[in-house]
Amino acid sequence: MGSLTWRHSDTLQVTISSSTSLPMQVLAQPSAWEVHLPAREGQLLLYDSRGQLLWHATVQGTSTLSVPRQGLPAGIYTLVWRSFTGITTQKVLHLE
Image (cartoon, rainbow, N blue to C red; front, side, top):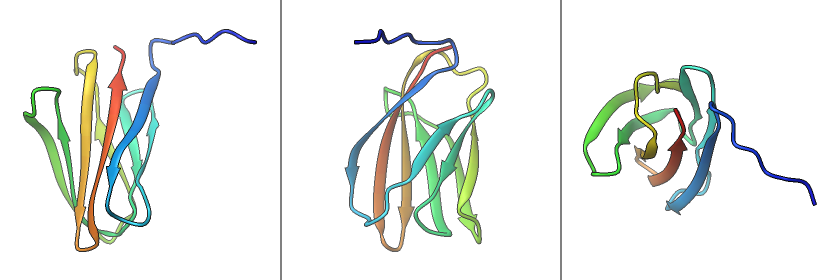
């Protein structure tokens, strides 16, 4: 078996719950998370591990959004997508 090595820019994503039929996908970019949304209208929110809202965006007419992560300390963050079809929650681990 090979070994697993974490790099400085790696992000681990774990789907915690999903009430929509299509989950969002999160890709780590150097300065942001690129989020592919399951719908073109809704609200995307970013929370820290204490439940504090750090960032939010209202989305209309797009299915991809960049969520800035520069300056965030290492930790577990929660992305919440809310739309008329339901709520999707995704946990991401950010390693500085």
